[in-house]
Length: 122
Image 1 (cartoon, rainbow, N blue to C red):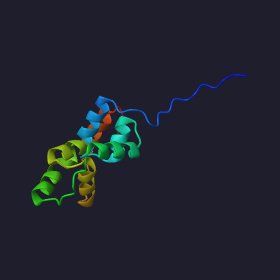
Image 2 (tube, one colour):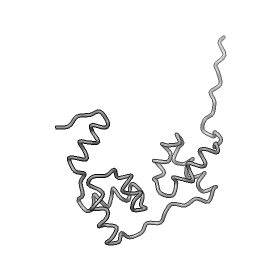
Image 3 (cartoon, rainbow, N blue to C red):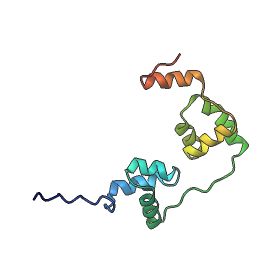
Image 4 (cartoon, helix red, strand yellow):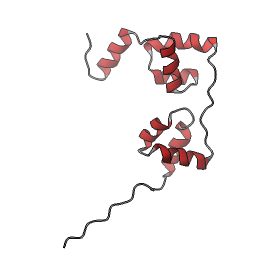
């Protein structure tokens, strides 16, 4: 009879110092899903550890006219992550507001992005 090797239980693995540092850095302004993907953890694990550390999500705030003006200026030709950083907003918040306003990326920006990623566009 062949003995089966016991599987390592990765469900309750300890948090490394580096993982905690990343969680503290990104939890407030990124979605739980994005942080979970970055750390290869479940959303529940992210939420539980954040709660244990006393971390909270940024509160939603209204968009000022000045922020909307800057969003209109930057969004068409800049990555949504960079736009969000410039506006001190989350990636999701910037993307959703841009969508709400009907903003689109320029063809020039999309071509540059495709070229950078090794894809071709007409």
